[in-house]
Image 1 (cartoon, rainbow, N blue to C red):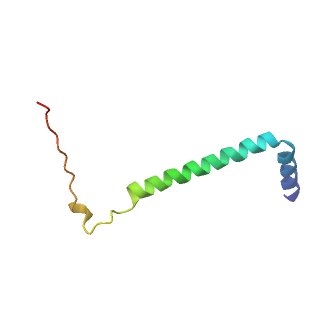
Image 2: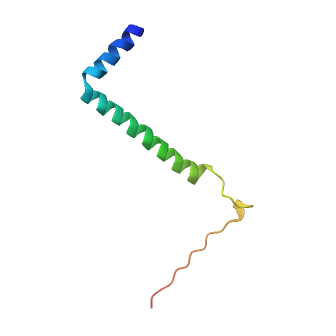
Image 3: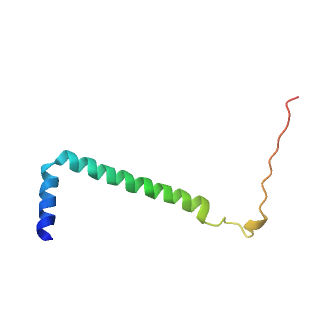
Length: 66
């Protein structure tokens, strides 16, 4: 296994363009996943910071311009 890791590292150092693209792709994937989970956690998973969230009501006002 150590030989395989050494070979992999040598190949990554030899092909720097491929290594840069691979690292950038992984970084963007991890960043996007973290951002998406943070939004879902804040919007859907956490309770609202009120004493009785079941009693909240949404009011909407509409009117005609005439």
